Structures are given as structure tokens and as C-alpha cells.
Amino acid sequence: MPNEEKYIQAFVNAFGVDSSVVPTLKFQGIEAWDSVGHMSLIAELEDAFDIMMETDDIIDLDSYEKGKKILSTNYGIKF
Amino acid sequence: MWDLQKYASNTAIIDDRGNSLSYSELVQAGEKLCEAITKANGGLARCLVFNMCDNVLGSVIGYISFLNGKVVPAMLKHELDEELLTNLYNEYEPAYIWTRIVDRERPLFKNLPNIYEAYNYVLLKTPFGVKTELYPELGLLLTTSGSTGSPKFVRQSYSNIRANTDSIVEYLQLDSSERPVTNLPMNYTYGISVINTHIDIGATILLTDKTLMQREFWNFFKEQQCTSIAGVPYTYEMLKRLRFMSMDLPSLKTMTQAGGKLLPELHKEFAEYAEKTNRKFVVMYGACEATARMGWLPPEKAVEKQGSMGIAIPGGRFELIDVDDRVFDEDNKVGELVYYGANVTLGYATNGLDLIKGDERKARYVTGDMARKDADGFYYIVGRKKRFLKIYGNRVNLDDCERMLKSAFGNSDLACGGVDDKLYIFGLNEAQLSEMKEYLVKKTGLNPVAFRTIMLEKIPHNESGKIVYKDLVQYYE
Image (tube, rainbow over all chains, first blue to last red):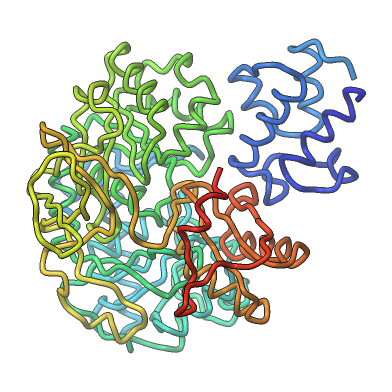
């Protein structure tokens, strides 16, 4: 599966939302993306991309777009 | 309740929006708020108020002022479901609502007149007036399962709060140099006890509504030199995921844990971390019905006594009883835990008429938790008799969930069970199960990941029609 799809799927799995809304998502923007949801998202991303995320990245990842930047810059994931 | 004026120039509260209040200013804010109530009541301040809680200045000032002014607050989360809130409103008929300005227009509130405003909170007058009679010693009402809309409150007295505050201050050795952060909600007994204890000794409360997953939280923590953090089991899972133990937090001295049993591996990790970094990790045990705390694990025992919640707090006493309610003393035998202490609350209330009731428990609380003690007298909680779970620290009553679901889904055969942080809904129809999950998510406000649905051919009932919950345990991961 190409990385973009994997990335979207992580959000779908964590929040139970439709893939079409994923690109608009922000932390606390939907009910499911609270701190509990955030924990799920991080777990899904770490699983999907086989990475261990750093503290700063975990707390800075507050939107779909931001997450893409973080994963590509800090974890070498190409989108 | 508290003698705040004696700390006059100490800083009482600092929030993450750049505001700070000294103890004198806190006293003044309280006097003004209670004056407004006294005037509107036409005489005495004492009455029932719904405090719509948030971890912001208005909410904390309201709470502290009400307690000092002998106004009785019922602590409700500000995001409480409208239907559940309306039920409580009709059952208890509060004289006022103290709520965030942004919520002023919610359906239940929008026609209520505003009689006072401060710190982004408004005091709304209800049509009930000072109807509800209050037992003179009644100080505070906390929900046991506000998430599931059970109208049950725990009635806490002023002396309950005083006894527990004194005990906690003693065993945690708190002083005015402490700067605890409010990462727990203040409508929750653990969250309130952090406020109660630190206000009592002139310390500085670092007030934030941000979560551990936000940069703003950690910036505030570091800038304001937070000395302690309190957490439920899920908090510690989050801290672990955040690589908390690699963070540079020079001001941190103490980590406390309550609100459910921590996974043994996590207990071990944090206990060892504390030992290594010369900090204190204090596992504790308690319940709203005992004001807050009943037991504590002395930090120097944290590594040795993994899985234990410790010993009774100063002034308290534990007992174990068998199935025939007989007290026993044997080590490593499981029985039901009973607690004795001045912090055992008056009892419950299910409607406004119950608020006149006095002390029903008489300083003895049968906890509903199964426990054993070891040869050194340290207690280990091994299970729960009562039908509730702790989901991210929130008490969720399983029978209430079943009732709500049956009522909303045409009395379908169903069951609710599970383990802490994971509630299982058992049903017969896949599509309906999915709707049931959505319904509970909406009503409780808890994240969907806390709920699992399992479709069964049939729900196990015994001959008297009662659900056989132990037959469902096999499904819990």
C-alpha cells in the first residue's frame, strides 16, 4: 500500500471516520480526536510505518497536514 | 472551609492564559460571588448551585468560594449531555447555575437570567429559588457516574473534606512551595482533592485545561515549574507513550496515582524511575464515597510492593470481611474491603429531597472492592464487586448503561461488561450494536476506542432471568 494510503488508514482506524474527511482533521477538531484518540492514532502510525515516535513529534502532530510533514522530515517517509 | 486570608500574598492560582490570583484576591473574588448570591436569595447565601466545571479560573474560583461561603455546589462537567443535565436539573432544582459564558446559550440555560459575571463565568438564576433543603453539614455533591446520567450524587460534608485534606497533606508532606498541575478534571474527586489540599496549605495551583498530548501543557508545566502530577492509570499510559521518563523536568518532585489499578509493568517502571531520579511515586486508593483517599503506598515501598495500594491513610483503618460479613485477619485471603474514617461521606442522593439527609454511613464504608493483605499489612485490590468500570478514570456504571440502551433500543436483549478502559456491549444484532456503541459514546462523552461490541447468538441468562456476567468474561481481551 502506498504511504499516503497507509497514513489515511491510520486515521480511519483510530477515529472510525470515513477516509474522505481525513485530510481535514485536526486535534480536538472532532470528538474522536481527543487525547485518548491521539494515543490510538500514534499507535496506528507507529504500527503502519514501523517507527517509534519521539515526544516532540507526538505532541506536535496536531493535524493531518502537520503529521505528513513530521513523518517525512523526521522519519524519512516519502509521500 | 479554608482560612485563605492567612496566605494573603502567596499566589493561589496561575493559569495558562497569563492570569494569576493571590490568596487575598481569591478571598475577595469569593466574597463578591457569594454576596451576589446572598442578595439574590434575599438573605442567606446557602443554597444549591450547579457548578459546570472546566479547568479554568471561573470554575475553580466558583468552587472554592462556594465552599467557603457555605453554598453547596454540585460538580458537573461542562460538556455534560443536555438530556442528562436536564434530568439532574429537574431532580435537584438548583437555585443557580455557575457556568462558562460560552455555554450561556445552551438550551437549558438560555432563558435563565444572568445575575453576576466574573472570570468568564456567569451566575444564572433558576426559577426554583432556594427550594431544596440542605443538611447543615452538607458541603459538596459529586457524581458517581455523571457520564451515564444516573442522578446519583455522593454527599460530602465539610468535616469529610477537612479530614481527608488533613490526612493527604500529612502523608504527602505537602507545603506551600508545591505547584501541582491540574491535568485531571475538577468535577472528579481526585482532581478536586488536588485543589482542596493545595489551597489548604497556601500552595500555588497551576491551572490548565490542556491535555498531556498538547505542547502547551508541557510548556506551561516547565515555565511554571510544576512540582507534582496526579494520574489515573490511563494518564500513566499516556506518559509512557510520551517518553515521559526521557523528558527534562527538573521541577517535578512527586507523581501520584489513583483512580484504578495500574498495570503491574507500569507500576514497576514508574516506581523504578522515581527511585532512580530521586522523586516520589505514590500509588493511592480511594473513592468518592470516602471523599477521595482511603489508602496510600509510601513511596519508599513503591518498588517493593508492586500491585499494592498500600496502607490506610492517617486517621483511617481497613478491615476485610468474608461472604458472611465476618471480619478476618488472615494474610493473603481475599475478602471485601471495609474502610473506617472521618472522611467516609454521608451517603448518596438521587433527588433534591435526599439533600436534607444526614450521616447514613457513620464513618464506615463497605467499598465493594475485593482485596487481600500481605504479611506486612499492605493491601492489594484484586477485583470489584460492583458493576462499574473505570474508563480513563471516569466511573461508568454498567447497569446504567444497560438501562439506557434498553430504553433507547426497544428493550432488546443486551448486556454491558468489560474491564477498566474497555467497555463491552453484547447484543444479538450487528447493525444495532454499532448504533448502541454510538449512543453510549454520545451519552458518556468517552472516546469510541473505549467501547467494543460483541455479537452473540444469545445473552446468557439464568433461570431467574438475570444475566450471567461471568459467562461473558471469556470475551474480554
